Length: 426
Image (cartoon, rainbow, N blue to C red):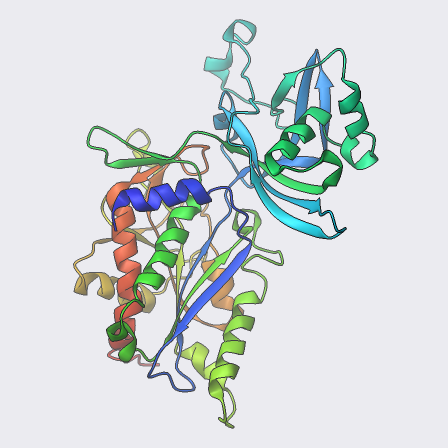
């Protein structure tokens, strides 16, 4: 898999609303009670979302009101060429309603910074914008006169919540009338494409690496691990990918990891494959033989802020997947699950690294502990090292994406044989 393939796909999928997705493959040697081998990731990233009533105007400008989603580095959104993407409900000619995805590709919005001449102490005191009053994108200069056509298109109260000019741009992209747009759910997004960078093209510069990079590697690995009949002939488990929304805001939603969606799917799969089996506990037995890889991007050591990392756990770019540990269970990794995952890498000559947060700093978390505690499934937390996490523009190593893909593929292909060699003394 060439590196260009994945970051090209990243570019084209970064605006898609993927709320919750589960995909699985079952193989020839499966019997009731065999487990699931799952890679789970999240698809959402911090961003700006349009408010239900987004239209406002000040000092001769049309503005678009937004709310912040997740914990973004919001100062990085200033002075960027921005646009919108998301989903809309459109009324059809027959009176039906259609859910459509939309993305305005051209720069449409911008959040300008205040000139230093008007904020002389910004470099000394720091840039500290008020997220309610300063983080409001500009749409256009205010028109003194509005055409009759625009007035007619903005008569309904539902459209008055958004600027008629904005709704016209949206309807042109959707090739429909403004009055046929019933509802919108749009994110603000950066228009700059993903690209390779660095003197040796060793870096990937992109928005939303956290966590579309993990999502892509997981899905690609599942697909490629099932290509030939030889891949399927000796597998005893069910291979699965689960992608969730709303991790950046706690996962407590219908499409988040806190919902029972994945486990409901697993239970239904076991029930379907059990056929005439009349014993009890088929699903519970399957869970006890299952293994979950929670894949979420990791904090690579920053050369200008090395002291922010624990001295002996400083993951580097281009050095392989990072296994995350936390004694307070902010990550779900245990000594056993870390060993099994590292053993996969060892067999396939794939490097791994390890990370723990400093004792004097707080630790983030992932969907790993949420899923692990849901039904008691063995879990390892890991991720690709990156810089600028939660910035509008992030950085990771090109080679790490290929390593992650190979490690995930190896997990699907060899975990069963490794797991059965392990004897745990309870």
